[in-house]
Length: 562
Image (cartoon, rainbow, N blue to C red):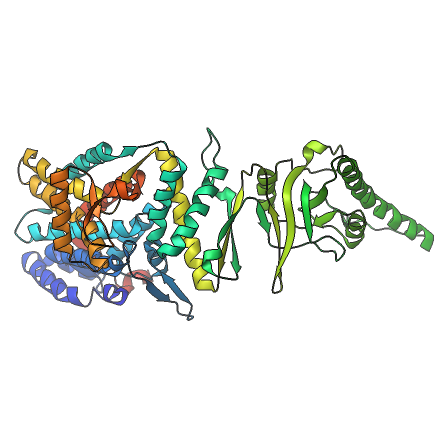
């Protein structure tokens, strides 16, 4: 498709472009001559030609993404110039990775990826609805209706659609059960059902763990760690943290239970002075004396940590772990190991904040005045070796406000696919909590809004009602494609759902396992309210803007040479 899009200017639309150019020459030779004189290589498409190019681009992008929609959608394989392979059905990933050269297709792709940045989902639906809005508009424009009338109809339909969305949203207390349904609905559109069921609980529990009353949910406090090991269904939630390195001393314990955690950012190694200085010694003894003084300075710091350990562990009989952001030299490691302290050096800065949230305690920048209040706590700290890599697991934290999702998989493709799915799942759960409401999925919202718009169009005066009808028909692309991707006849399935909706007055969607209508709420299929709201806004604006383009001027190479 991308090849087709990029060649559109000289391919299918080239014929249209020539006709448009000849017509303009006949009507206004001087104006066209002026453009040619400025840049003889510029391409100009006007009126019907410009519209045909834009609609063709939108339809082309729609054709690429339509097969990926829903739980039964198919995968796409993207192969880079270097031969890297990426398997995905995530619309956002596809639009980011594909090299789209056609300007209109690129514009639609940017709008769709912006939808993902704002709400975390709805990328594929965005592209499908924009493409369908332009297709429905083209049917009326080909019969002589002006694009401006259609755009006015779209705007009226959007306002009504948002009102209907407000009416059909379901306000609920966001308990764990409803959040599990929301996460499952999101994850099943990205990965197969068996794996989605495994990840659903991990995703919901991780968001609930980092959630704090009266604070916005910070998903950066959910660390995602990859491990190329075992199978994808072994992915699990760690109520604590995983560091991607181990202790650096052979005598330190590999496993500590019921441990105090000291989180510090203190240098425990010999450091050069910050200013350039020179030392002159009269004798070797003087040099030795200076070295000992410098060593003593570090040893005093280490001794204060050892004193704290002796004080708290004698009282509570627990293990003691030091995690330092700066370095710890071999002498200091040796001293700590002799006193049964496990020490990890050069921890990443982002992990220091997470450690304090996961284990409790305070990250200290000085070893002066160390007290028990500075210490965090973990039920289990152990080192895990996988090939040449070492990982340190800090688990069983009492009330962690930062957790880790440990993704496992046999290969790189699986890990990337799960990571993309988890990112969308986390956003879906976060959106539901922040919205305080959800809307039924499985195409139920689109069917309900479409029916409401068909009734509403009789209240719209003039030809703008045709734009409302076009909008209503365009929204049905979602249930149609869901049915088509599941192997059912789109028209037959849609008619069944619409009939059931009119008779039962309930929000009815498509059961993708049977092709029959189902009440989405009873089946536990829920979508995010904010995703649908953003969809209606962005699709209408972009479709209207593209419709109102009546001339495209594409500069040739000569304009780039100054």
